[in-house]
Length: 291
Ligand SMILES: Nc1nc2c(ncn2[C@@H]2O[C@H](COP(=O)(O)OP(=O)(O)OP(=O)(O)O)[C@@H](O)[C@H]2O)c(=O)[nH]1
Ligand SMILES: [Mg+2]
Image (cartoon, rainbow, N blue to C red):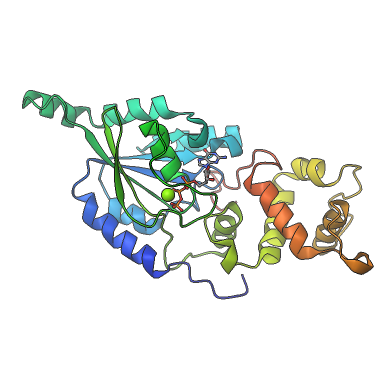
């Protein structure tokens, strides 16, 4: 990305400090990540802070991800000793599995509480993760009502907030956080393209162009289907920039003189990707996490 992006604004540092502080008073952590990028959407700073506290990884937005790769990620996490559950929080899919996995993970604690006569002991869960991965949506789904504010952009939740459910879980909604040094350009790209970074601070054309090239490598047939109805744009026939322009032309993103409106096409492509119109895609595999 050409311009300098502050990946870690002040409110995220504050939220990360609060995570460390509040962690002491919770029993368990739900860490949401984006099922399309389970590697890049896990925050190493959060991982360090959460440490050995019982946690469940939630592969959210599973409806947008490639199901075969999601299965591979679940096995990968299982083999490394962590429970991971695919979820589509906005359709309430995966909730039962999550609740029963939480009960299993906290069964000793609940048993000890029962022995001491505390039948109604709840499990206190802190919900953390990078921005826009569906933390607040998940909490609303578990609570069965819209209490937490949600939104189709990163940075919606700004303050920690406890939300009770009618079941055994009490949930703390946390603001989404990134980390100061996002090591690779690829990681920056996929976080931006999937919507974890504010689009106002990024260059849409640059992000769309780079993600477009990546998608052509990983999912050529989905790209061909969505953008080249008559098979005119075939990989190899154009160089990458010509292909990008040809796709824009095909979608009718033109300005006077017949030139391609790159900004308009970039927004269209990013919107297609974020809303699943290209198809179910996962940009990272456990055996090759960085693609
Ligand atoms: N397709 C899809 N969209 C989802 C899913 N879960 C949440 N969303 C959408 O993702 C967007 C972000 O959801 P939020 O719950 O606000 O995300 P958040 O993690 O709380 O975001 P911050 O508070 O900004 O960190 C909203 O538009 C939700 O409707 C899902 O499983 N699938
Ligand atoms: Mg939120």
